[in-house]
Amino acid sequence: MKNKLLSIVIPAFNESNTILSLLEKLKNTDIDFQIEKELVIVNDCSTDDTERKIISFIKKNPNLTIQYIKHDKNQGKGAALRNGFERANGDFIIIQDADLEYDPAEYNNLLKPMVNSFADVVYGSRFMGGKPHRILFYWHSVGNKLLTGLLNVFTNLNLTDIETCYKLFRAEIIKGITIVENRFGFEPEITAKISRIPNIRIYEVGISYYGRTYNEGKKINWKDGVRAIYCIFKYGLLKR
Image 1: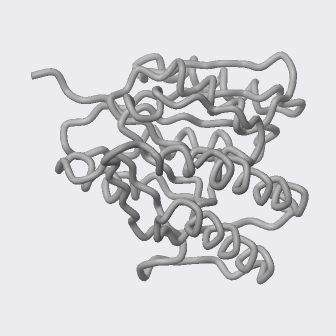
Image 2 (image 1 turned 180 degrees about the vertical axis):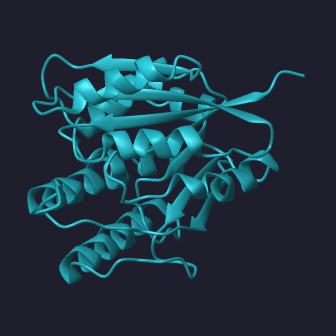
């Protein structure tokens, strides 16, 4: 029987400092359950050395299954994910940021409820379980919990972390959703739309979080938080 395929969609914008380390991590990450890996790298018009490092990695690893997509202009994380999902060939699709805040070694924990036919969607939560969690910004934590709680009110879910990078989907689920948001509004949009799928089975798994500061390259800011609130009302309340 043919092995299943996990597509790892990697949006990247000016991640020259970490992209090569991440790709090496992914190369060496062992997936259980007889699942193969496909890397879908979306370069969102980086202006630093990101592209050169990606191409160098691809050339040095001809045996890996890799798709490389380059945007001609910067469009945002949501747009990069939309294009990556469209190109992904996997039975399962997971989002992987290029900044080393999340550990690919935890893929098997996320895959387990899906492979065992319990889940259609699995979120990795930074706020549950006993995994390592870097202590950083208090107001980011408050904002994240506020956004998660507000969206839970409108979707009747009890998630703990809607802003998490690690979102794992059965391919037919995510490919059946039209993604509108181009930036970080993707997070509440996709959660709200998933919540309305009849009989959808959503799970959470505790994950580690090796966060970075703005000096280390963190990009999300308060404007994205305001947009997220708008998206919660747009997709969570007004679309019900």
